[in-house]
Image 1: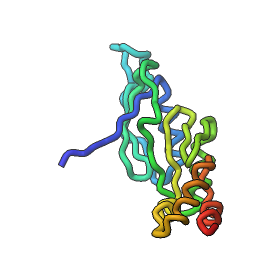
Image 2 (image 1 turned 135 degrees about the vertical axis):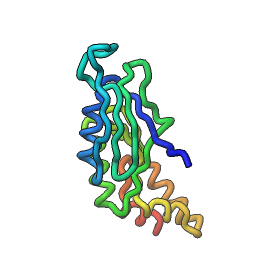
Image 3 (image 1 turned 90 degrees about the vertical axis):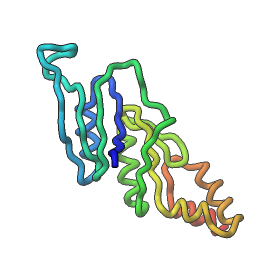
Image 4 (image 1 turned 45 degrees about the vertical axis):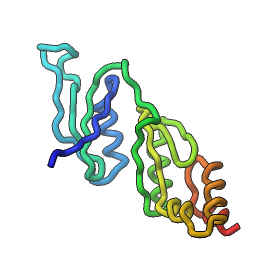
Length: 156
């Protein structure tokens, strides 16, 4: 079977991005880094492409220049076991980035992430439609997802 690897287009900060992401996610590492040589077209020694793992998921990246930017049309979901994980990833990924709503954020490189506690899905799909609606309304008013607030809203 073929392997599908997300490829991320950076302006010129792929090396910085890899180091940042590896500091945020456990079990991460950089693999192959290809650098420009005297043959160009970039400055010799700067990164052209690289592959790296973020907690076991393989990515590739390219320093392709400023013509393409990240948008919210593509985001990565961080599936968090509990509020401590949500708080850790939210804090790390918003450092130098910006918060959005409903657990979404953009990191310092403009890449969109959804930092989602597992409990959110349980509450939004509650068999009691009134509980699910109250949890949904609470989520819509949040930036970082707070499980205790969702549970309180669902309870009424």
